Length: 197
Image (cartoon, rainbow, N blue to C red; front, top):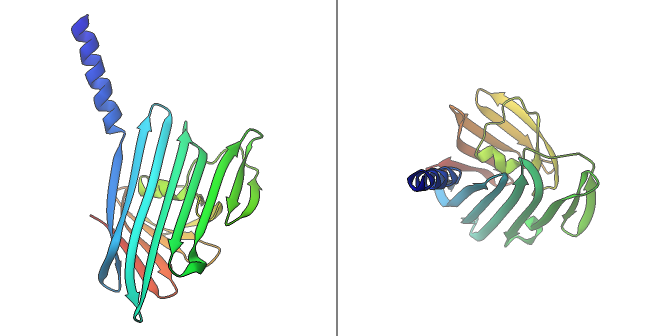
């Protein structure tokens, strides 16, 4: 019996470890590598913690541009309970501070750059950060913690999807055999491409 318990604990430990995932992408701009993006997912029973961290630095027209976005999402039973998004840029107008939290009256309280709002939906199950771990087959919208709102999702080709943003900084996600291989983001200065290592 003692050996059976030991085997169960080892198997349970291995299963718990298998629920953790980390993916790293190299970020390039105009052919030059300018940083890295790391997406991580940790699951323990019914609770999932997802995180996205990006650090980039580049010179554009002799001006150094530094952007450091970060997203953290907590889900329980695959439903968003809280999300935090932060983006710091040395070009101040691009700064974002957003917080989304599920409330007890079947909705979400949101705050983005000091402005509060509410989303009246029972539950949010698929966020932009989920795009790094799952191909969004059959979906036509995705929740953005950075924008604190639902965004339109368009399938533009086999394994390729466009996330349409309110400020026209659209992003394209490309999958091969259900696995995310690249992310292309439109910026006023050109396209930024993140490629899976």
